[in-house]
Image (cartoon, rainbow, N blue to C red; front, side):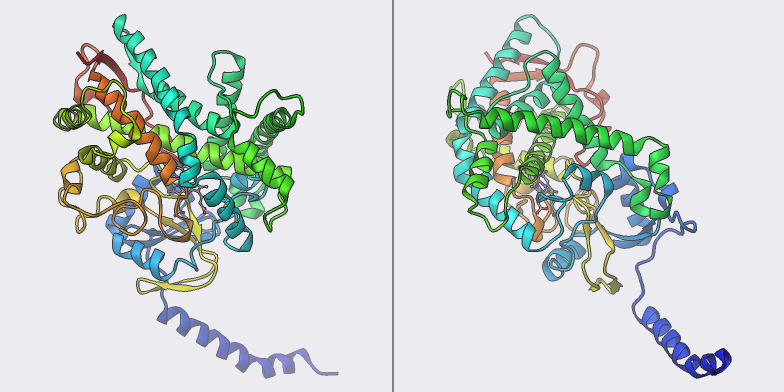
Amino acid sequence: MVSPLLILYLILPVILLFFFQYRRTLKNKPFPPGPRGLPIIGNLHQLDNSNLYLQLYHLSQKYGSIFSIRLGLRSAIVVSSPKLAKELFKDHDLEVSDRPKLHGQQRLSYNGLEMIFSPYGEFWREIRKIFVVHLLSSRRVSRFYSIRVFEVKQMMKKLYGHASSSKVTNLNEMLWSLTTTIICRIVFGRSYEDEGTERSRFHGMFNECQAMWATFFVSDYIPFLGWVDKLTGLRARLEKNFKDLDMFYEEVIAERMDPNRKTQENEGIIDVLLQLKKQSSSSVELTKDHIKAMLLDMLVAATDTTAATTVWAMTALLHNPRVMKKVQEEIRTLGGKKEFLEEDDIEKFPYLKAVIKEVFRLYPPAPLLVARETNKACMIGSYEIPAKTIVFVNAWAIHRDPESWKDPEEFLPERFLDSTVDFHGHDFELIPFGAGRRICPGIPMAVASLNLILANILNSFDWELPEGVRKEDIDTEMLPGLAQHKKNPLYVLAKPRI
Ligand code: HEM
């Protein structure tokens, strides 16, 4: 019989060889520096999910424009400069086009049966094709123009009502309700914004879904401590939210498929999806779960981000009366004396477009974009990033990069007037919609709504702060979530233009 000692003696040189080679590899290809963490939990105890982008920005000042953090047992890197964002999205986009599989997001997306959270690959390509060709194409966006116009006019009626009784308007609420109505009518062919239990059920479910998307589950980062999520009740909360949403989709799908349904005139995206399912025209066999997951993508990705941007735009303008006056003058002069500005009119407003870009620069609604994950090892900067590393791109920091932006903290739309810099993913200093293969496919829909809403409320109303409130009192505190909302409501007085 061969002795174990002899075996050890024989294989020891091989083990030592591997060990020294591994050490040399590590030495040659270091991992980006970062704050020292604790065993097992890494840096989790130092990070606060409510303003992660800001904490990561401060860490980038100390550790550089690429640094690492440890989220439990998972490694993550954070990219914070336009130069590295360009390298990431141009040279390594293929390697960083995966998404980390996080518990809340996976459950609510029926395990990635949609676009935002599905891994990069053939399935994602097919689903993205469905979105781009059938749901978010320019033709489809134009088809829903009448919905946008109708709903903006409805909101303006409410504002006139408030003005006639000198009532203070809560703009967060007003603009959230408007964008939700527009998106719900586009997606479901109907709105859930009428007062009553249906409205509160709808809002409750979607707010909770936002929270679940952004919440840290211990099981995501320290799998063997996954039972903690059960103990804290997080799993049960997620399961309840999933069931509520699932029941809601079942109801809307049944409603749309009802053979006795009177009319096809309010066709929404849900009908397009159901038709695609029936035709089986895509190489993905669409099931009801795919449809439910895609509906959630449309709703959450579209409503929150667009609502947040309109509120930030008004916040920025009320903070900067000079810019407010200048943009209103442009709209009112070039728009003639029209009571309602149509899309073609808005094309003529270069300063308004510059204002919107500046809002996206200083107030990106998705400051950390949507997390990516490497699917194989790649060199970024002078570091080798292994496969399965989470990648955060800090747009908030990139949009303040002093090498790319003069006076980065100043709200100065003029900077865009003689510049070709845009947010379509080619200029890496301005990436509110991300870049590369996974860039937001909803840009045309988002821009169409933003332009119409802002042009019309700035054209028809002058905006004042309630008595006793100074512009310095308007805060820019944000709520946690994938999309950053203004935490405290923006109260204003709308005065109809004379
Ligand atoms: C102001 C409005 C919006 C902003 C700021 C925004 C921002 C973003 C960002 C940062 C990403 C991640 C991109 C990346 O990983 O590089 C994204 C992805 C996505 N957005 Fe938007 N978005 C907006 C509106 C919309 C709208 C109106 C829709 C329409 C349904 C939409 C649908 C999506 C989808 C489906 C994805 C996932 C793409 C993928 O993973 O392949 N978004 N968005």
